[in-house]
Structures are given as structure tokens and as C-alpha cells.
Length: 382
Image 1 (tube, helix red, strand yellow):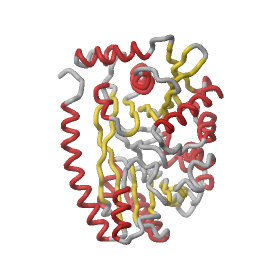
Image 2 (image 1 turned 45 degrees about the horizontal axis):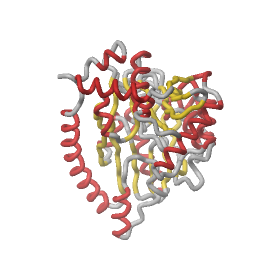
Image 3 (image 1 turned 45 degrees about the vertical axis):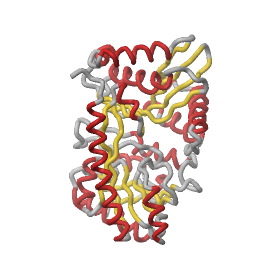
Image 4 (image 1 turned 135 degrees about the horizontal axis):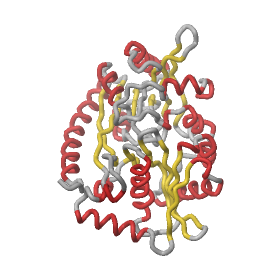
């Protein structure tokens, strides 16, 4: 399928976020990024398609009656931007070898480093359908004349199936806050060492000096003024990082309209002026921090709106964890723990496959050492 608009929303969502799932308590029973509404917003806004480097090629499997049994958010990629699992060096090495790395087939949610199911099936226990979906991804890869398939930020359940089908499994890491039944934010602080408690209290206090206060906005409370502010912050962040904004303003307009009940805005304000803010998505069990920015340099405001306010909201509202996006070792000192992420890769070229397999194995050993050191540096009292 070249557009998700050709797939009924109810059918897609029945596979992407089934009502009766067999997920573990850590996983998410509703992943907003896999929803038809989110993926459609990316298309309608022009954030994917065109010259973006993401060309939709959704894979669907139906039974004889036309019921959607399985699907995958798959895209033909002409570059490696917006993926957050970096393979630029693989592409360059293959080009030096004389090969064409692009196009490649990417199974992912564009611009979204959030773990979730990628092999979406109506019946989570139907291994036959899952394996049939994997085999058809390989067929699509061949028909598309792609060099490879890359399934990024896939779930541990996906990994188990893909490993059995000759995919190379690559590990990465993120930092998540886990709510261990804390009564309130002070209860969370009580589990930290005295030095880290003082650090966080000082950062929170200084962030809200000079008349700054913070608001939580969600659902019907979200207005056009918030859309304008969040988009301004998003652009400001890209300018500061000298990055290219992947998402159009129309994308934000659509999700603010269609997914307001799944959004949490954390906005820093002085008087009537918004100075900084973060856009979070709400699952059933987790809060996902995605975009943030500021138009004034305020000490520690990033930590306040992106971390501390969201942790406090999660504790007060019963969310099990907070995922604050890709990278960021500085999150460890603020109560976020290192968590492994996974991707799966398979290549048409045998030589490239062997080289990547060797690279991934050596990278895995280094990552294990890094995570061990990071866990030793966690700020919690022993």
C-alpha cells in the first residue's frame, strides 16, 4: 500500500493496538505512534513522502474475506535520516565497496525512537501469520530492489521471531524513568542519595525563578496558542542543533486536532508569554517525551519541563514509566535508568551481511560494558 489512507483505520488499529494483547507489564497496551491517526498525520502533513526520504510501502496481509490479519509500517528509504539507529557508516562502507545501499526497506515509525511492535498482527499468538508477514517483507524488499531490511525499535517479541528468520539483531540503549509505586515526587526523591536529592531540588527551584511557572495542558485544554508555541519551540531546537526539521507545522496541527486526548504539553510561562515547552504523547502505561524547545535561556528549564514535571505527572496519574527520547547520559543523574533497545537487519549482499554481523557483535560487547558502568552510577540509595 502506498498510503495508509487506503487502509481502514479500525482494521489497522486492531492489529497495531489490539484490545486483548499478551504484552508484559513493562510493554505498552496502547502505542500512540503505531496508531492509524499518527501515521496518517505524517502523510497528510507532507512529513513523509515527496522528498523526505520516506516513501510509504505499507505491507498488509488479508484473509479471503478481506479481514486484515497483519500489517507493517514499512517505507522505502533513500537516506538514513530520522531513524535514530545509525547506519551511515554501513552505507558509506558499502558505497566504497561499490554497492548501492539505497533504497533500503525501513520498518519503523518515522522520526520516532520509541520501542513497539513492528510486526502487527490481529492475533498476537499467531506465529504462522507473523512468519508469513516476515517472509513477505523479504519479498517486498526484493521487488523494490532494496539492499536490505531494517526493523528499528522493535519489541523483544519481534526480536525473537526475527532472530529465527536470519535477521541480525543490534542492541542500543535509551534512558527511562520507572515508577516503582512512588507515592509522590518526594517519595521518588527519598530513594535517591542525599547529593542527588539536593541537586534536583536546586535545579527545580532555579528553573522557576524570575516569575516562571509551569502548566500541564491536555485534551480539550489545548488551543491554537499552544500549537503556535510548540511549533516555535520545535523550530528553535532544530536551529540550535543545526538540524533539519523533519515535521511540518501541518503535522502538529493535525495531531493537536485528532490526538489531543493522547497529548501532554508541559509549558513554561512568564506572565502571558510561553518561553519553553515539551510535547509528550500518552500511552496507557507510559509517557513519551518527543519534542521540546525554548526561546529564552533559562537555567535548568530543560530538566524541569522534560524530566521533573513529567516524572511528577506520571507518578500522580499512575503511569508506569517515562521515555524521554533518544540518547542523553545526563538523564542518569536525574533518575532515568539505561534500557536496551533493539533493531533487526538483513542484507541481500552476503559480504555486507557478514561485515555488519561482525560489527554488531563487537558493538554489543562494548554496550554491555557501558551499561554496567551506567548502572553503577545510578543515583538511587543502595
